[in-house]
Image 1 (cartoon, rainbow, N blue to C red):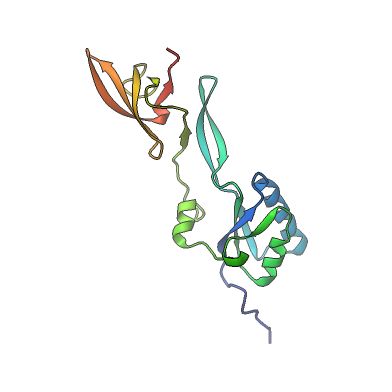
Image 2 (cartoon, rainbow, N blue to C red):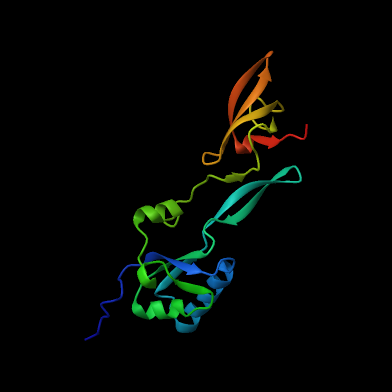
Amino acid sequence: MAIVDKNIDTEPKWYALKVYSGYENVAKQNLENTIEKYGLEQRIFDIVIPMEDVLEEKRGKKVLVPKKTMPGYIFVKMIYGDDIWHAVTRTMYISSFVGPAGRPICLSDDEERRMGLNGIKSNQIKTELNIKVGDMVEIIEGSLNSFVGTVKAVNENEQKVTVMVEMFGRVSEVELGFNQIRVSNN
């Protein structure tokens, strides 16, 4: 009769790990080496560094740049057990599991969905734009393409700006996405 460790889960779940900030890629590689070294392929299935594509303006052109959304953390899909805790926390550049006293708590279904860990990825690309009220901007997309206006309001969370644009002899207020404008050199 086989002895079953009651501290081992039966289904893989996602867990958050604290890692040294700036060393997420190295921590992931070290954990992959640990998995291979100790034959944990049947217990640790996936390692994810949370990233998003950010649209940045460089030298007047918009460029997609991958950015870490949660520096200092990586996510691991595994069947947890105390033996795994020791193997993972002894891996170089990994500090601990996220949870009370470094003991892991798996992510909820809602947390998995929000982080895109359940296979559903968001197609939204975040745009990083250094812009403030009063800046002159050029509209580069849509029916007002090539119009120039003044920023009235900036909403970072929704990635939108309100711009005052003169058209047909009067000033109109227009709401635009960050990806539809660029800071004007005029």
